[in-house]
Image 1 (cartoon, one colour):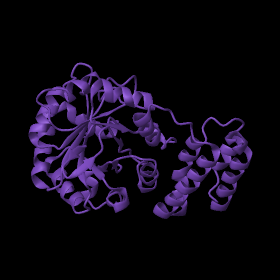
Image 2: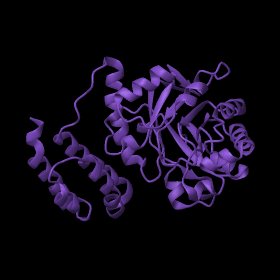
Image 3: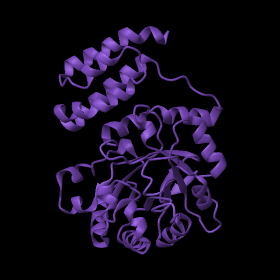
Length: 329
């Protein structure tokens, strides 16, 4: 068992990564259903929270069904991050996660997200101040360093641990890499196996199959694996990995009936959370991914991503079931 604050997680736990405009309550529900052990919200701007921005405040809404869950915030000013963390604490998540890893230029250019890797003293100062200001466990998600010449994650991990964090997630790329190239897990393993590191270490980057997850656990001995982009269109990856870790067997990929049922459930949850207009718009990318790889699907896909009529969408989904269900036999 792995312990983060008062939260108990299974050995070799699986986490859903925080992703902007993706890990909303509807998608979190689906990933939890498929076995994610811990969820994270979309990342939230500390400045947006303090200004009481409606979009930022909405992201604080969580349910007991989602637990354990962490709310992630980002920013580049100590006072703002502390104030935002106190607001997050009032929403009663299981932990508060500090985003020092987002490589998006509009964020990193301001010195927030991965941009914080260019100012390690400030990163440590913010972390220490937030830990002191709240009673919830504070965790950090970051990267190997800002660029190839500054892969300082081992030293950063020691400083963050000294600042009081309860766990550390490391994405195996630098800030300037963004999501290009291949994630390098060697330094993640070096942090995890450092004699002075005693907090849980979570690895992140390029885990998109059960075999890769097992390799990361066995080779680098991380406490958990965090999955982000690979769960989009394939939320059952959590179920597949857990089954493989327990049995060594690969599950067959979901058939069309399961995919259609999943798309309809996800749509229902999205509509309930965001309303008809926005709920439909934000489901379009999920529809594309849920049915990726189907032959002669272009016309149906085009209709799915252009219509806003709920009845028509459900009819299209049922037509997909009828057309392709023969492959489930």
